[in-house]
Length: 496
DNA sequence: AACATGCGCAACCGCTCGGAT
DNA sequence: CATCCGAGCGGTTGCGCATGT
Image (tube, rainbow, N blue to C red; front, side, top):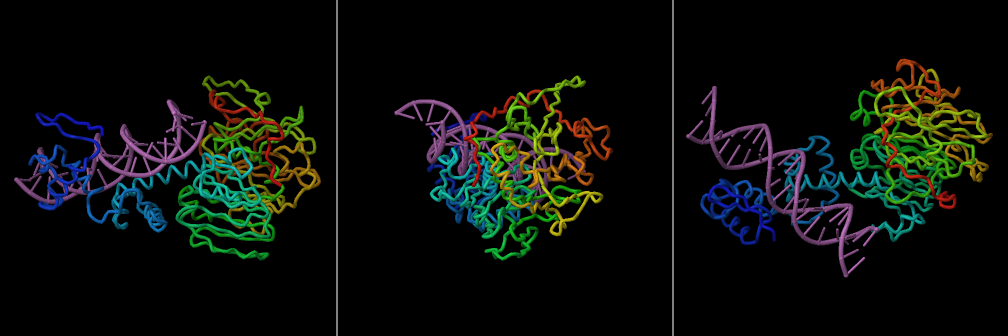
């Protein structure tokens, strides 16, 4: 055992791990004199430890009735910690006072570990069985091939199509037909049974722990054609025909991200969309790259330039050659990149810049074939869309499904080959709206005040940006960490 | 098998608070 | 009222074991 010591005058004070003999002396001291006057332990010559060290040892380890070291927090304890932390903040001592046998240090460490776990879940998603990462899944649930472990979140996905696509604001889970439930492994269980629904996307705008573990959904969700469940607080679950939504209500979002009149916590897309655009991820893929993998093209014909929507650092760019750095006039180290995107069957036939979204933004795409818009002067309100959900009731496009040349815009295509209108790419910082006239427009209700985010726009007060003007500034080293997309088409994972 | 990395937890550090003098 | 000092709190560090390569 390593023994550190510090010189204190003629005295040598010990530091570091406590030995059993020291513990015995300390316990005996407390028995005789009580748990106080800690400094006198040293002045009496009982232990070469500071009073502070003695107190800490007693409070955290030796005090009677403490739960033994290594005793995991129970789901009830975790729930209480989460709730109290939300109320009180990092008042660990206060929180610990409500947890018999737990010390403030226990709670603090537990919280820290939990935060890291959640972060890992978002940054290192593991993909369904059949993926190259399956062997990395060592959780108990790995025995069940239908279970996928996304770090701290375990997802039941018989179709193998479950995918974690979100990060930053919280995880998004996409489910396909046949997936029956989603569950979070932790304090609370959020479980939705789905039988007749094509796709289920769940997301939260808040951090995973804030939302996922503090709301509980009724179970099982009836598989009827229409049912609605309002969560205890701010989660609601709605099943409508072939789709089901889980949503956080604006109130929950606004608590953390105010002022905000509109939130987009989750997206529901048609099954064709989600299946055809996903591909097998590499291990340790950055979470942001994983998001992009849902939207990038699996195969691109020569000349059919179609690049990933980039949303900042660490994004995966499938083909660097197609991204040309443009000189800008700034004297700083920033380089402007614009990505172009065309598709032969799309009305969007000319190059459109889709490079956007500053780093640290959370990326998502909300689709609507019913011209759903968050802008009043654009909207054709979907009946279900009275708060923060954008619906896509698009039906399966078989042609598109079979088309090996699907690119990431494929999910924007409607059955007649035309481009789906009113596509919104959202992030809190830089939401955009692709209108029916294929103009990228800013969403005023979500505007960031940071004018630099609108590089290329004439003015942040401008109502619309031309496609070519949507350019994001990246620092020069942004692409250092990018991986080239070098896997063969056969490596692309397409859920069936 | 050896090494690297991840992870949880015990202990430390710096600071604030409040009672005693 | 000012100062000292012990107690307590929250953040951080680093050790040791587990797991991965």
